[in-house]
Length: 154
Image 1 (spheres, rainbow, N blue to C red):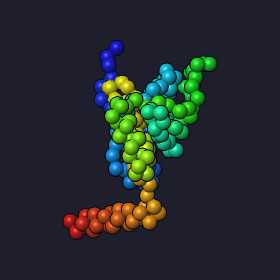
Image 2: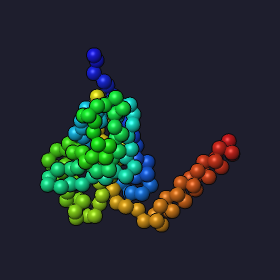
Image 3: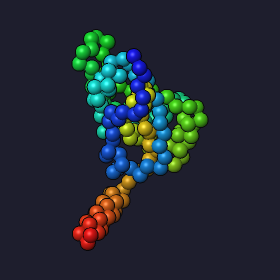
């Protein structure tokens, strides 16, 4: 059987871009069991309430929902179990410093297959205030109105 090539997106966390201002992104591997991978190949996952924490020199992904594999047996996984993220030591140390000193959060942005392996895109993000969200919405609406006006003129 030939190896998979390219990227295939499984799930995106669109709400994260609304609630957080992303400062930096990291790509991390994720330690999964066999039934979790099979469930992901079916394209089923939710990052809506997910977050990551650094503890004891390791990064852990919490509250990511990967539903049970329907054809699984007693070896099936728990849907919301804590999963270990695979990063280099320097990246983990850098993330730990930034999260503890600057008050940033680690938020998963997307879950995808890259050359047959499951990866998670992790964002180092700062939470937005309500007025920041309103400002971003107003700016987006103004840009949309300008585009409409330009299209009407042509």
